[in-house]
Image 1 (cartoon, rainbow, N blue to C red):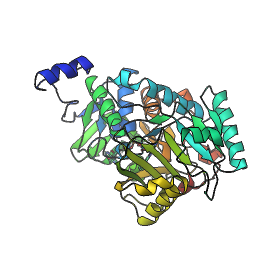
Image 2 (cartoon, rainbow, N blue to C red):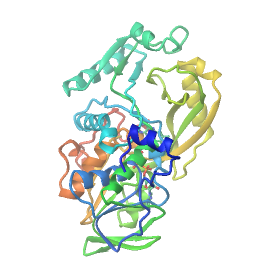
Image 3 (spheres, helix red, strand yellow):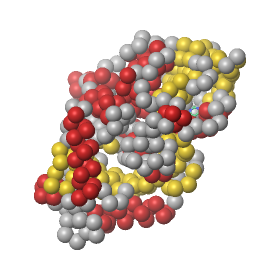
Image 4 (cartoon, helix red, strand yellow):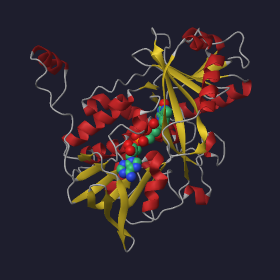
Length: 417
Ligand SMILES: Cc1cc2nc3c(=O)[nH]c(=O)nc-3n(C[C@H](O)[C@H](O)[C@H](O)COP(=O)(O)OP(=O)(O)OC[C@H]3O[C@@H](n4cnc5c(N)ncnc54)[C@H](O)[C@@H]3O)c2cc1C
């Protein structure tokens, strides 16, 4: 069924009896050409591009819970492509271009809103670094504008300009950055993939792999054994657990919880996404009016989808120091998601040592904005057994060869990425 304004009016006039389920609820088949483990944004996008771009429709997505229950439905919805390094920038810009056409592609309203992402700077050295990053972006054909203090004041007069411990010196703006309704991304990809024949199988946890002579033959699940020629693993914060089932016990990834916060609904106040440069704090306003914000990960390793109070305090302090009026808003909800933090802050989309088993993970703070490009590139790898050109740097062996993509210049410290 195609969605359209005409369809909405027709259904409104006829009692909303003509809507059908957005995707089927199929029983798993005995065997698929390709299985994607994980019904998050990346797994579902992979399935859609496998079907649409690479003509592979004998595909299943296996999700242990419900689709959208993981990080894809828990993030702070920010999209941007403001990267410096060559290994990253073309990939994230590819993703941005896919976001720009996503709703037409999926025939689904994902509320893609390019309202701008503004990174504040607070020292001369930080401004130099932002200028360098902005120039790097422009060399890659990406939009970037360096603002002085007055330029920032015009966009966000409510920020703490006059009595801040770390005064605002300016900012780097990417006007094409913005926000997207996160769970609609999962639903849109699921519906589109299903319409091409992909089986989306919820409540189906992968519990083991069948591997013979170094080749993967299928997966053991809570709904029985399912065979496959190729298997892609896209389980974000569960990467370590699932890959261990295939005998891969050492990944360059740690799992940490990241919390997100939303306030009560307010009248429109924030023009776009704003990030604090002297602490870790980022904020935007949802179309319902809530201020959506976050900060650091909790520093310890965990698989729990809930965090602890020290980070709550730290995030609220960041908000208060840059935007004191946030202290008048009441907090409505807090939640957490389990993040796959890689050692250099950049992701992995690669084959594994097991023939037919492929891996997608290590997305750190930034996997939501990567969803379309990650899906496309992982589908390319699964279909052709070759990396897509814009994802060719995202290899496991970069850690062994010392070719880290250390975007933040923080070294091998997952908690700092
Ligand atoms: C609080 C928070 C804020 C964030 N903010 C942003 C942001 O503003 N911008 C941005 O770009 N990124 C952000 N991120 C990061 C981004 O959300 C993630 O990097 C991205 O969603 C991860 O990919 P995914 O959507 O595929 O993960 P998920 O949605 O977590 O998908 C993985 C799926 O695998 C399933 N799974 C796990 N184990 C198994 C198994 N054994 N069998 C079957 N299925 C299994 C899980 O149930 C889950 O549904 C944020 C993350 C969090 C937690």
